[in-house]
Image 1 (cartoon, one colour):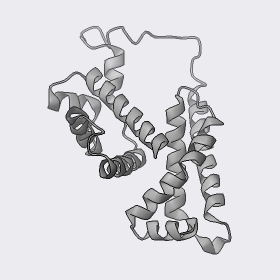
Image 2 (image 1 turned 60 degrees about the vertical axis):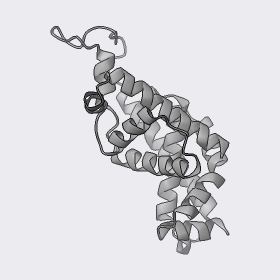
Image 3 (image 1 turned 90 degrees about the vertical axis):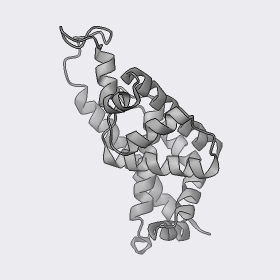
Length: 196
């Protein structure tokens, strides 16, 4: 099937067609991500932004506009990464010369550090949550032993919209443990995308 046919099927809800496009564009996504740098982010964050661009391309592709899917997808991927770079750039104009240790207590009465407080806030972008859920669902279909039971519990709560702090409270763990587990989950997702 052509990219255009797969995109049309994916838009009708065919998950296999969407997964096929994701696998076929894996190298393009990684290649585009390697060309960019986002202030305050690591390379996997750039890859995630590129994946968001690919998902947007799949959802909004219209062959009537005359462009092939590959061309359209590359434009969407580039735009998404550039938008993330611009957003990060706007944030960098804050006070550049002040620094703050993440290891210090969050406030005078707190037993938690700033790092734990930040980790407890978690990810709240609905679009990123939806994309992460789709990728995790794809991984789960292809490998049932990728994530530990603890990681599965955390992902389930995370997909339901719980913050790291709320997940930690529900599971009787520290926000740092939840944050670390989510880091492992994201790394496993990256490995999966590299290996497919």
